[in-house]
Figure 1 (spheres, rainbow, N blue to C red):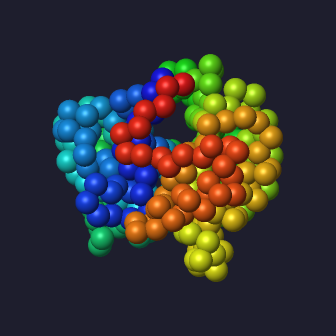
Figure 2 (figure 1 turned 30 degrees about the vertical axis):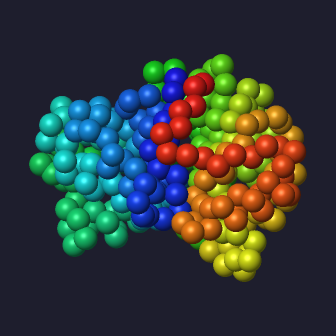
Length: 254
């Protein structure tokens, strides 16, 4: 099982892509602008999208994906998300005003897009691959994921601020190998991080102190223009854990 990073930036610009990951060749974890780098043949293979939350930098490729390949496929693309996220997508994105409702195109019985509600702690199994929603704490309802091959697990926190329930679940994962965790702002923007329910390096280090298992740690969602200083601050307070910056096209084998 392989997870490829299509996008991991907190913004856009040359060579920057927002959050999206491709599990093998048929599952997306979030659907930010990085999805746009895939070929038509690659897009056609995507059967499932697992969302952490509804913010645009994590969902903005879904409308274009469905519009581009929906008619080329024999079955709908399934969006897996918690109920509040699905409601936001229905009400504010696929609402015939901002974008057509592809859950009704070409008709409600054979649509290009369908929704599947998921719940915290309830594992979805796709051909032996296990995806389990984890607690997160953001300004909209949000989750993270444990992705488990059986041999090893990767945890992706999604967008979150400090949240003890997350670590209680992560510390139960005996085969944890990788942790991808956000740090959106540098320390001078701590007040903004708190207000927007993200992390800055000082907050990240407090959170990592709650991690009781060994893991390779990767930092995601860095804001353009602040990545270098943010990573320097991360290393200054968590250097013993050797945190690294997540990069586009990075591949994790599980």
